[in-house]
Image (cartoon, rainbow over all chains, first blue to last red; front, side):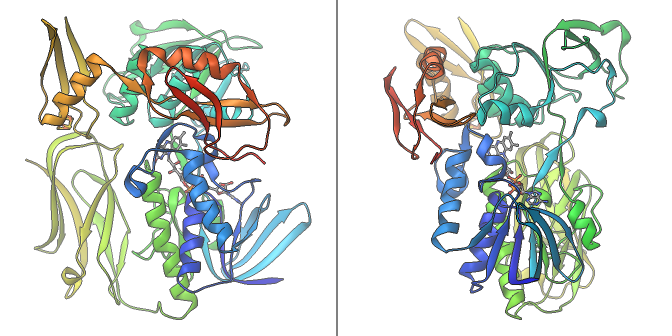
Length: 415
Length: 115
Ligand SMILES: Cc1cc2nc3c(=O)[nH]c(=O)nc-3n(C[C@H](O)[C@H](O)[C@H](O)COP(=O)(O)OP(=O)(O)OC[C@H]3O[C@@H](n4cnc5c(N)ncnc54)[C@H](O)[C@@H]3O)c2cc1C
Ligand code: SF4
């Protein structure tokens, strides 16, 4: 068994930022474990730009953003175990991992979970029809094209209009494919407006809302799909069924935080975020286990992933140095129109100003979001427009956090 | 001729209507002055950064990601892609290396390190 002060599981933007922050806050014995050859996680395949606007004031591509952090990891001499897959973590913080040298056991004083998320697959969707080749999750296609240089297909239908689906519509088009349609089950796209404009409108790619793929055709290779409109209860409208010939179907139907390991430690998952419940230090209900990035909740901006992970890294360092102890915890609850708020708990001991991150449950024009403790308003913001695809952030001042007995609620009102 | 454009400068995403008349661009639907400027730029000379990948000749199944050093005209995107598609470079490559020079006013530069 090897001993380390802090073990970071996952070397994407979350893991790297957490490890750097832990180091910079005084813990030298920090290691990162990642199953891939290179650090950077999903960013290595996100070759488009749009990363880093908040944090660095410029538009970087995914690999460039990752490189800023991997350099900092190297400069500090933080040890990286690459091509090492973590298979189990126990309550006692014993990490089991495998790599080409065999099985590794590490005992850690603190663990930071930063495993990111994976894509929902066709299995989770239940589309009728055959099982031909030519059906990929959008992220898999992205990796094949951008990292390995494969050509994926020529006539494409994309199901799902979140940012990954939109980015891939443009990417496939640039590679010479014809994107016949982007279909979205909901009545609005979950993607950023900027991506709708620059990935679809620029190339005249049609976006069909309230529309889904109902059947898959083809024996060996995909030959086409049947799409249909749905009503407000997501019931298929039979008379709107139509056939679109295509050789490729990309599924971009959501991300699921990769939390098998989190469960193995015995941490319960929140049923809305599918991630651990944490306090403002990003500490879970098990002392010394922290989580950050997409494994905690799905982020749209990597800048926020880095911010959150710095908090987790700093807190883990404090924990190792015995500066993070006990304290009363209160709940943070989402109400009217707010789908979730993170952190779900606030520890009232030595707290600083806290950024509450949240998502609204559907698109709204003109809203006011209010954070309250009982009748007392701790913070409120107005938004001309709020959409589920863009995370909202509200800062509550530490002065407001004295004398709170019960819980904090966050709710929205249309104005 | 009228054109419908969505302003993407801020999350509000105002729907703009732009009309070019007698050599001038008129913009409606913007909530703030930034939207007017955006509408004009989109009508007169829309620019886009292009990102893609180039094959590494001396490594199997390895691509280096690239971008245009400055945005290029939106109408040149496919011409730029044509140049990139048939380009090839040898590793090692560093971030910022110019891999193809002067493609419709931009250089194609590496965004990933390949050792
Ligand atoms: C297609 C796409 C487009 C995006 N576009 C943008 C954009 O334009 N702008 C923007 O700001 N953000 C964008 N994002 C979001 C941003 O990339 C993510 O929020 C960010 O990468 C999440 O970081 P992470 O470190 O939490 O997860 P990841 O990047 O997924 O990293 C997780 C790491 O953990 C490792 N790991 C997982 N399980 C294990 C295990 N058991 N053992 C060892 N290692 C493990 C993985 O190998 C991976 O390296 C995009 C995301 C995607 C997928
Ligand atoms: S016009 Fe102004 S308010 Fe409207 S989207 Fe553009 S920048 Fe935002």
